[in-house]
Length: 600
Image (cartoon, rainbow, N blue to C red):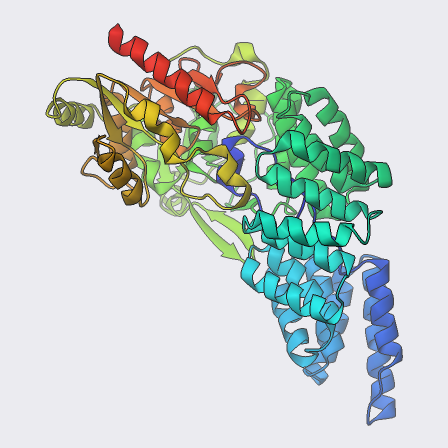
């Protein structure tokens, strides 16, 4: 994903898909020197009815601005709040509070403060622009677009404003409009590296990596130290097959990150690149950045136990709580280390496992000596907090855990090299009674090679769409002779299924909730002759339970770990798209392989 906008936050499922964090293009910083100068000028112009009281307020605001200037955002917040307690209609104080809360990472509080400032000072373009950038970062794209347009109505031709509007349009997949906005201003401001960089992100967002590269090159020609452009260039060099150049760009970009948020995004991209290059020890250790509070979706685990430090202490005989990651696909991938840690604690220890509640039965069956419960996520002040409610009952009965660890962090301990990955079909155990029942259901469909299909993610916003193919492109697979197609795709796919039926292709949909009945989905996957699809939750479940699985992967999928296969699931067969425009080639390869299977 390009570093084009703090407006779009990477989701857990994006990480599961294996691509880099979002490209950056959004420009501007609410606490930049220029922004602080504007605030100082506004304070100098302030006039009030009570000169003495006004002087005191101005001095307090100046002190708050000075705190922002030196990076003491909590002190700035306290000073702004003190003013607002006396005068809640002070728009500048709301603006100062908004800036300080945004820089402190309290994004929900900042959003409310910017909104209050704009209500009091509706004609202040700086407030509208700051609020628009934050709304974009939080994914409120329609609101961000309206505010950007409001700002540009006052300051037409403003480079940052036009650039950021283009980012919002890009994030809404309105690519032609974004390009038109940028092209018109580039004609007037051809020396602006910001505009060239964002133009590159609009193209890379669509998977047009080769076409985007010259625009990042141009941005860097104009400003060699432009960290965003260097980061974005790394994001296109990697899928273009130049990982070493990409790594050099990432490491050169890091010192120039303008905000802690950008720094965290760049470090996340570096971690994924290292893993994708097969530098597993370095990559898995660097992947700890996913828990950095500056990452928008970083989880904060709330549990009454210290975090386990494997470098400092052994785990033999201890009670260890393993907390699952943020997406189902991630919990499948990183859960491959659970047998290792269960063996490590030994018979005198105990492993407790917190996973997505829909997976509890599957994990408990697979690890009968462990205690498995569901975790729960709550967003507090814009931050994701993960709780493990079942631990209250467990703690009351057996005592609390000695330590806890995030599930993915086990890879740095138990998978430091490719040789450490076990060669096995899967590691989870489907319900044998359910497998038998689904085999009976499939036999009732008649003869033929039973193929389960996944073809897209439930979330297809922005850059994610380039990792999936349109349903129409699956026609060669759907029409493979001798096959019976089974729909495993969750979500509303009625239009796709109707289109297939109109074309004479029948796809059977099993009588189950494909989104929530994950234990049944695992059993059905094993009952089928084959499961095919991109690397999403459903195909990861199939691979983890040892179902015969074919995965179609994008060129920047780090899960291959520098190989041509998925070491996490070594028996899975992979099909490479070879590029974001390579889906037709991958589909044809799958069709050819299917014909060979049926013939055999």
